[in-house]
Amino acid sequence: MSAVRTTCLATAAAASLAACGPGAPRVEQPSAVALVSEVPAAAAIADAERSRVGTLALLHARGVAELRWADSSGDHFEQGDADVRWLRGAGIAVSVSKLGDRHAWIGTDGTRWWRFEPKAEPSRLVWGRVGGGSVSGGTPSPRALGLAPLLPRDGARPELRGGVVWVELEPEGSSRMEAGFDRRSLAPLEVRTIGSDGREIHVAFEGFLAVETPGSAEGAWPRIPRRTRATLAGTESSLVVAVDSARADAAAADRPALYDLEALRARFAPASVEEQP
Image (cartoon, helix red, strand yellow):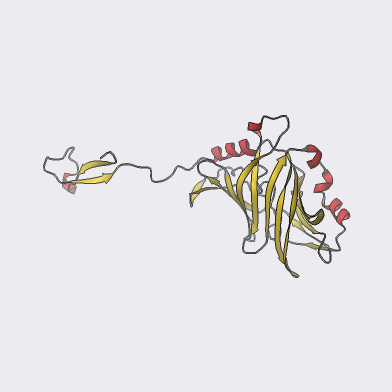
């Protein structure tokens, strides 16, 4: 049979013989087959990520968002149209509105994260510092949301776990990060951010959408996750964004006030302000 090879069943004393005698009993053994899938190198993952989204510097995307969280006043759920803007080096801003009425504004400037709740009673702002040790209540970074390349940490060695290739990423402050990639396509599937307090944010990706980029060939357009689900592990807090359209639109994204916490606080004038560690 082509899938097997025939060998002698020899005793230890005869193991050094080069050939079997004509009357020796025989046993069939499986042919040499690679039982362990090859794990891609960290450099290959980095190259794939730079190819996927390395040229993206700004973004304006539209879609639908679902936001769940719990606090001292109970469980909350908001669903509506999502308007996502991101400018590399400045921050990210996500607006959730229903029938033109804004119910939540979520963002980060890379140093702080925030969540405005204009329709809460009383209206409020919850904010904290990125990488300050705890990820509870925080907004995932643009990198964790798949908008910037997920680059392995220097010296990191990818490993195969449950059919997914996992590798440690460059950290953010005191928080550690790791990402799981499809073994064949190297498309990112999930990112985990682990604070020094042990709490985690898990971000899962489903499908990818090309970002329309004026002046660039369509085949070279960056690709961002089509559906993103960010969950604070061990809680019901989550943010789900399903993107319908995405464009590298400087006129929409390059607006500094969108990523300025002080400017946003003056704009929304929340009645209550809560800082989280």
